[in-house]
Image (cartoon, rainbow, N blue to C red; front, side, top):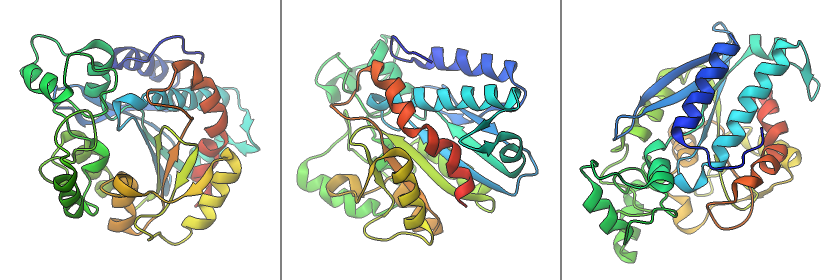
Length: 302
């Protein structure tokens, strides 16, 4: 799909509802609600009896909603090709559907995206607080959730070590990097963690989409899980993204860190695209073209 303008939460929901009504293989549900009571959508593709599943998550950061476009494109292509009985990259989608469940959370941070694209409305009880944290009313570079917490620092992985770093660097609530008061303090991260814990018996791996850098992270503070390196090399080959290790603030409190640390299972961060966030929405087609093969193949790498 060609995107000429930024994908808002309302436009996303309209598209997901349309697709779920058009294709019966798409199951639309909600993992929870945001601080501002927006339902967080999840699309599941796969037979209910499938013994293995994977999870895709994008837009922890409001400046990275271009990754939402990639997951919506994947959902639509999977459903369309399945309905035609076609294969993708040699993968028989009928077989994939029966053998693997794919859970997709295309926009984890709808409140932050709404701040960035629509501003903070006068009725928002946090308006004064977040505008102060943002140093003004222009939220174009706002990455955090509705109250200034960076969702991808809010997981319980080296969380308290990161709090010390916050103190040293004077990081507080605002556009990004602030981890919150406690792990999973934010309803968005809490919802993801609850979903993962509930489904951990079948959940084999997690793929998180961010932008920027065209890199793949698969380690957490040097630690990784069994099979991760082989899978990471396969993903690198499919995307032509280089394998890297997160450094500095990026190596604390993320979903990839938490999943590896908590469950010793493979988790990967794909840093899609290049440039300063937010990337130009016109880059979305190119990003999907680079990650498309990985999205279709990831479930069968386990």
